[in-house]
Image (cartoon, rainbow, N blue to C red; front, top):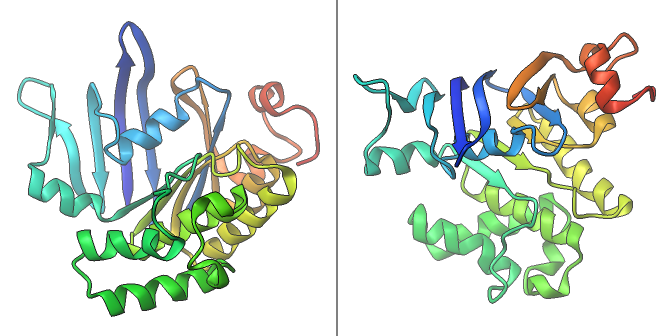
Length: 251
């Protein structure tokens, strides 16, 4: 469903991804964990075409977003094909990225009407159904400045779902939230996981990664160090590398 193959990415002289290969199957929830600077968010951004790669290949639903050309340099799809392919991906950011001058409802309807060319009535019906799904139907006419951080993140999740993505990605969705608001957001993601949605979640919530993810990928220094079933990677018999990162707690 989603593949990164030998992906390289540098910022200036700093290598951030040093040959990363990852595979996500349809209906699978994959959690990516690791220390700050390990490359996990950069990998997610590359898979969503928010950063360009320096080398390697990324495939979405079997189609190449980017692949090595004849000279070995990365070649991306042409603009029209690229836009169509990226509609398969949905992204929820750490800092929500809601439009502050739009109501909650318009934050959900505008992308549908502008990008998917849905009619206003259909877009609003879709938006209201998804706001109900994340428990925020009554906030439709509020503005982001009047919401808590947890509510903003739930709106951001609903907005991503409005676009009917095949793969939903989360970049540290709870890192800016206090514990109570964190649980609000994680409960929504848990519910999506129960629907067997294909999801990639960059997270620092170890309990969530163990309990909700099918697989956990641990990154360190721009490389995938471990990739395996969540209960094994974060279980009682976890490796020394994971113990050094996550400690001895019984996750």
